[in-house]
Length: 68
Image 1 (cartoon, one colour):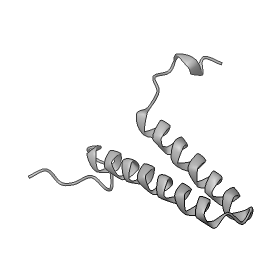
Image 2 (cartoon, one colour):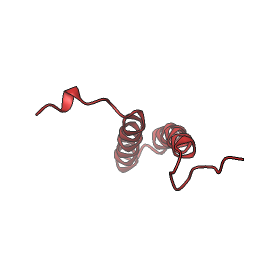
Image 3 (tube, rainbow, N blue to C red):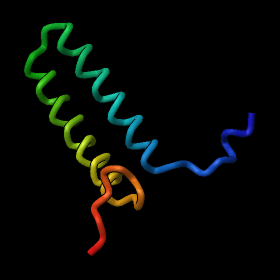
């Protein structure tokens, strides 16, 4: 009920953008637009790289880089 009061997790926002881009890419591919599919997949991969950056930056995360 009070979800709008919670702080937004920036990683979750990026994850939602990634999932949305992947769904759109799937739909574009199903329509037969391979060039559009390739463009949308490139966008999704860029968003995926943002997700990876979040994962590496979070301490204690399984993909976090060890501090030297």
